Amino acid sequence: MKNTVNEASHHVVIVGGGAGGLELATKLGNSLGRQGKATITLIDQSKTHVWKPLLHEIAAGSMNPERHELVYLAQAHWHHFSFRLGSMDRLDRAKREISISPHFDEDGVEVIPRRTIQYDTLIIAVGSTTNDFDIKGASEYSIALDTQDQAERFHRRLHNALLRAQTQTAVVQAGQLEVVIVGAGATGVELSAELHNTTRELAAYGLDKIDADRDIKISLVEASERVLPALPPKLSNSVALELKKLDVHLYTGERVTEVTNKGIHTHSGKFIPSALVVWAAGIKAPDFLRDIGGLETNNINQLVVHRTLQTSLDANVFAFGDCAACPRDNGETVPPRAQAAHQQASMLVKTVKNRVAGKKDLPEYTYLDYGSLVNLGSYTTVGNLMGSIFGGSLFIEGLIARLMYQSLYKMHLMALHGFWSMVLQTLARMITRRTEAQVKLH
Image (tube, rainbow, N blue to C red; front, side, top):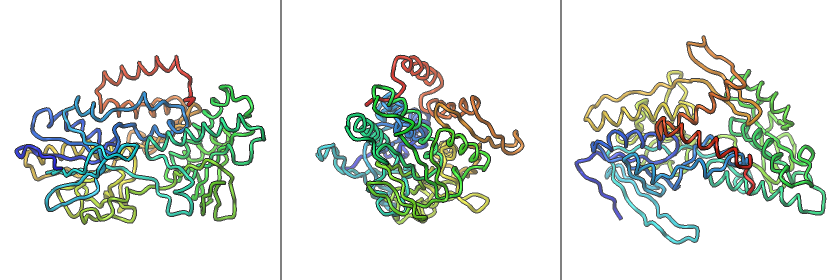
């Protein structure tokens, strides 16, 4: 089955509906798509979009994903682009054609057959997945938080573990209600704080046989010597202090060597018992990108791109966000952070408009580091802001940091829906929040 487009219209195909890909499709649809100057197609393997930095809240149960989902088909209808459900698995650069694998329902019945889609400009924005570094048992006995389905799966397992402990006659065993999080980057740190709050909320809803302080334990394991190793030491030390106040067990300088159904083993000989292991250590681009279409990739499957975000071997294929290795002036590559993907998406709007207009000059991307924010749930938020206005780096915490952290999500919503829609959605969620339990109970 082949999808054809109007040959007179420049066809832009965006693979990946994460924050960057969806923002790009929306902006291009609102301009080139609405004006009929180009056809914009977005491809994703899911039917709905949830902002990835929210996944740890879904996993912990402090957020109901149904209230934050965006349906791709609806967004496409409102913003003048097309959506196709499926996963890209082949690329024919000579034909300028990609292939989308068949889509099956939960019973294994084929719903959508294999399709091919032709492009004039292909933009790959498939993000990243967790890298388990082939540690023994990691893929089998731990859960990553790359997708909404994985986050919801972890929450169900956590909830079932609490219910099991409530109804059993025996005492709670070692590790039965302990969550071990491997990797003390932003995801691991934020999840540990969120879980500290929600597990106690859950226990308060009739689980009277569980003593949260005694029975529920959270451990954070990090191979580096400190939590948040990629961020400034001052921020790292502040976060570590807050986590210790929450009785989160910190194991720094410990490299995991094996994961079992009983817990994890580290290189120093430690064994930490746990029935619930979350793997949040390291990232890589999806495996299907390795050598796809003969494009150049690095050792973690990222597509090698120039500063124009064009892939090194094909000027008609672009990549950005976590799945792209984009060079910087210091010889390193752009870090896999949400702010980089947002900046690159904004630049690519100009790039695509230039290509559609027949202009050969394309802008080049320069990474601007505006700092980092780490949200420790209802307890506190800390961060550092970067820029000449602050004379370098400015450490912030508390209410100001929390407001700035929340504003990141509002900026994402505004990019997708516009200012007034974002305001109305925020008000609606504030109202409904007052009539609901503060934690997901199922």
